[in-house]
Image 1 (cartoon, helix red, strand yellow):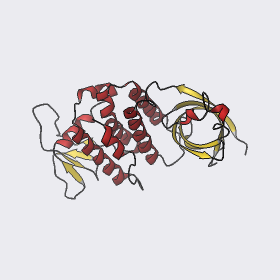
Image 2 (cartoon, rainbow, N blue to C red; image 1 turned 30 degrees about the vertical axis):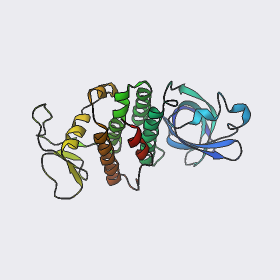
Image 3 (cartoon, rainbow, N blue to C red; image 1 turned 90 degrees about the vertical axis):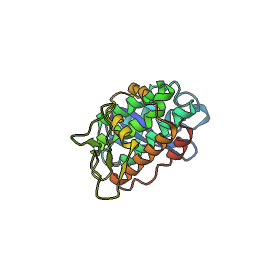
Image 4 (cartoon, helix red, strand yellow; image 1 turned 90 degrees about the horizontal axis):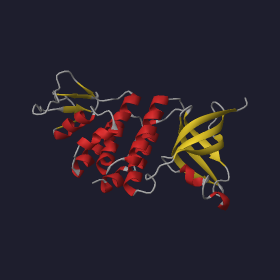
Length: 255
């Protein structure tokens, strides 16, 4: 069966060197989901600048023309260029750490090469928002992304009827990590958290646009604790999720 030539957008997830001048690149594509591509010759001296290996940094947004063949484990790229070139994401240490965390989290959840345009567009939008984000928005983006990403894998935490988030009416809340529910009832198993963290998570679940995160002045320790909660939550629901290697770095640099 011959390969078809197809245009698609892509988000670079991971890059490893192959041979003297080539790369094997894992890309989340708009058309085919997660795919692996062999990119020949991009590490040669003549291509180290524009149009070379620098385009395949994790979180890069690309326009690609690819040779696609169903059920093939390693595809090839015919043409590639920036789709939208980040202005600050690769140069800013904090923005880059946030981007690498989001890319790792996404990669751990993507298992099958299936088209998922809404997830692709969501991730693309978040990376673009991160590139232009204020310090407070970018500090809160890892939590926002972690929470919103659950929607695409069927594990979005939901508020049980009767839970009120009205200011001045705070009530004891429990986040049941196993049943994906925030409620006022303490679960009868150990897989839950309670206290102020749950109130913050519940409020963050109401956020729809990254710009709204400017309203959340969370302290550094609370962010750290909430990110650990989300890692534990994904471990509960995504098979073989493991540990997030980028999380220790992110926790250190987020103020």
